[in-house]
Amino acid sequence: MIRMNDFTSEPEELRRQELAAVERVFRSGSFILGSEVRQFEEAWANFCDTKFCVGVANGMESIELGLRALSIGPGDEVVTTPMTAIATILAIMHAGAIPVLADIDPATALLDAASAERCPTSRTRGLLLVHLYGQVREMERWKAFCKSAKIHLLEDCAQAHGAIGTGGTSASGVFSVFIRRRISARKAMPVRW
Image (cartoon, rainbow, N blue to C red; front, side, top):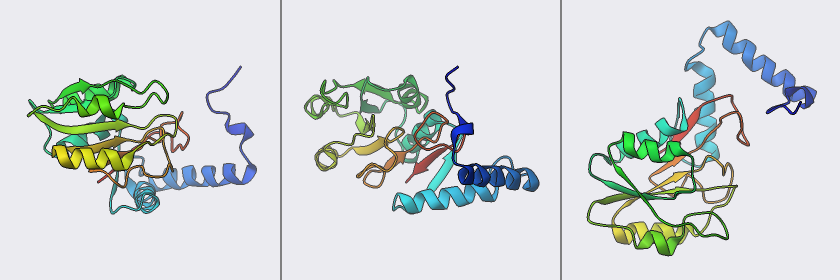
């Protein structure tokens, strides 16, 4: 059997640290929020070189919260990529906004800048990048485009932990620590503002 995560193959020292963390949570009784989450939020904000990190339940919620924090909602448009999880599109819709799908660059599977630059209308309020496979491309171009179009730049960094240029250059950066991601704390979604 191929396991999704094989914790038995982890180094013994890492296993000891993980078990100690689990024991601290059980002894504290703080299964939701608590000091472990606060410490993670502070460490992740520091890692991302930003002021704040808020752990929330899932990726869809974190994107929705980022949109709502920027007052993007009913009737507003958000340009994004079709090469993403359905939760990205649903988050835009849950905020009341309208997803506008631009083409992807076939060489990278990331949002194609030329296509995205043709999408804004008078109702466009945001551009949501999805960094796939650890790739981050043309952030200076995206920032300049969003500034000139007077729209917010948001990032879904769920597959780009530690990639240079993620999360710290936009209005909202969302990272995933879901169990299948490169970094895992079982399940929590840090949101960076």
